[in-house]
Length: 143
Image (tube, rainbow, N blue to C red; front, side, top):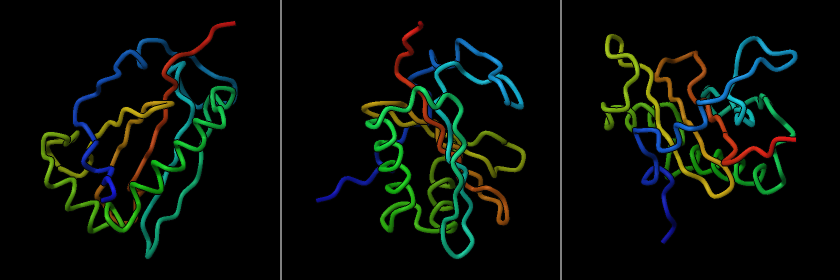
């Protein structure tokens, strides 16, 4: 029996240490955690459309890139959040993950990976980016 990724998502961040050190990278619009590898931003319009936004590409080993791809594919799979309706149902089943108590449209989930850790931000509004998959290095070797 195949493991469903949704069963592994947490509503409290188990890796808060990734948010301890910040920097303002070159060509960036703002400060980012030193351990942020990058993120995938996706929206659902008949199918999932996504773009990749690298942050610290030097942290992205082949193992990390493969894990990010597997996690994204698992999140948008038929047995997970295959479409926006499935995403909304999943979010509504986890009110404790709601980030905006007034509008109840944004939710935060976390996944401890093998090569890196993930913050998964889900947005239930139509015609918006609905999924942000941010990846963080488990450790950063300083030069």
